[in-house]
Image (cartoon, rainbow, N blue to C red; front, side, top):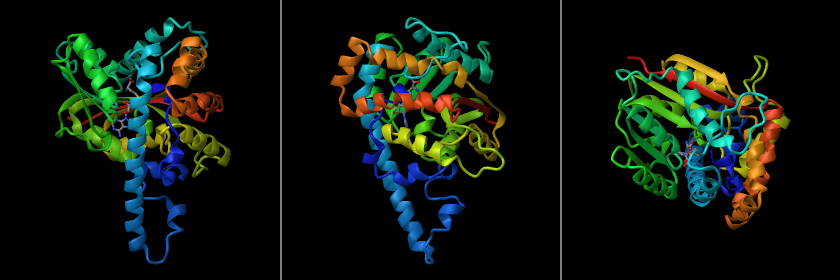
Length: 347
Ligand code: SAH
């Protein structure tokens, strides 16, 4: 998640991804909700072809932006926060000291496994894990060690993949923890390979949530557990078709500051999992448990070391850092939800 110090989305040819309200990200940019369909010209075939081409270009721009952002910012994150690039899990209402954060990040991994019912039992524990959106491999190494498993990580960032490999060599894990640059929406794996499919704070980057979950399900072995821990927007009320304009405005600002396409809700993920006939589908809202995280990231950026490192990592990173209070505002307004969604592929 890298504190989402991402670059500026307005550099991307991806406006259609950002401006859609809530549903289009589920369906893919080429498959718009009814309000967008009403704008179609009479002759819709060429328009559809053009829309598909525009959305393909937008997705390429988004991927390039994500890769460049993580290439540039991962070193700074690792210096200050270590190899886990995701929120920590805290007891609600507790003020965490800086020393607690690494433990809170490990706790996030453990809570996700516990919530999803992943067994430590030697006969049932996962043996092959995929880490989709692996960062510099913090989760990959942790899971490989914990379960004595093999783990394959994918990221869009070549710098992350190389650093993840180097850290695994140092830990003596390079023979069973490997990394490559690859797209989560077109994974370089054959069907049904992995008995744990892990996505820690990468789902929010995916422009097509249905394709994303579809790929997670495709590479999962029969009976495998799929775990998605991700940023969502609040569930819509039955009377709502979309978020409120001021809510969309805040999310669009966050998307502008970071490399994010449209957001969706946890309920949307559930709907997708159901549509794919996945089983044991469960979700939880952990927003309260991550509340101390963003203030801590801001505090770390305000230390002398954090501040000088930030200045050296360039304008994109600084702009992302300046937008961090927007995340806190989103959580405070109960618009942004930190969600876990888990399910199982049928046997
Ligand atoms: N899961 C890691 C890193 C989270 S940062 C951790 O918890 O430490 C988000 C990660 O998602 C980055 O590594 C980024 O490259 C990856 N990512 C985003 N979009 C992706 C895509 N389409 N395919 C593969 N990886 C992607």
